[in-house]
Length: 324
Image (cartoon, rainbow, N blue to C red):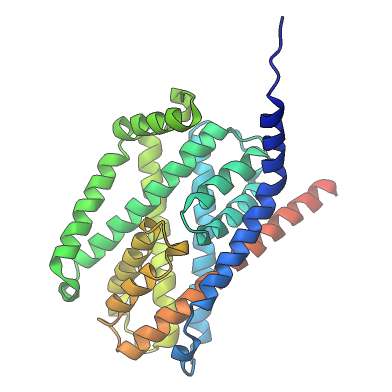
């Protein structure tokens, strides 16, 4: 029997990637978060006055939504047959640091980070690739559906232009067609074979049950995330009525979805702010809308770092319990 050995150059390259990928990942995240913060127009924030109760509610909801995203990712992995026994605390950490990879332009770091770090825990690369791709698509589609539905039912959406709402509905329908297993699985198999030079088995692909369950759990995250933005806005604008809740949730979800589609911008830099500024002026004056939009960027970074810190604490606490 003969054994094939990897080419020395290929082995050396693999060793180099293994050594420097985590370091390079953190360096790039730090650089682009710095770039992100540098774009904040601090002089436009004026005198900040906020309600600490609504601010606290917004922060807790935003942090909870990030943990919910991690739970969804693990749910999709389990649905594809991945064995995650004993790795849940570590996978929260994997997701939180990969989530910071959204600040690196291109959007690939968020997906590659999950694949690289989770694979080191023994999770199948093929299942990680499929689940991460599915997660990203489902997240965008569900957020778009929630935004188009809420805005279509609000008469004030006409101020944004009725044709845009109709376009959102059309894109949402197209997205649902895309995630149909008949279409999605063939697309994923083609892309995976093209780039990985390998075939995916049926066990690595989602079923109708997985897709619809994924849509359902992402609908929860879209609602929770939208509520966090509403309460943040209310923290700065106390007289913002609850009658505006559905419009603000729809408008901010629209901004989130479009920022995710703008893969060229780190964490949707500029795209999210432009959409939010245009939509929030429908329910508050321009000065208030500008204040909320500018502060929202800084707050989002803080919540992402808080998510990373909380996940790190969970992982360390879990490790301490096992040793004890």
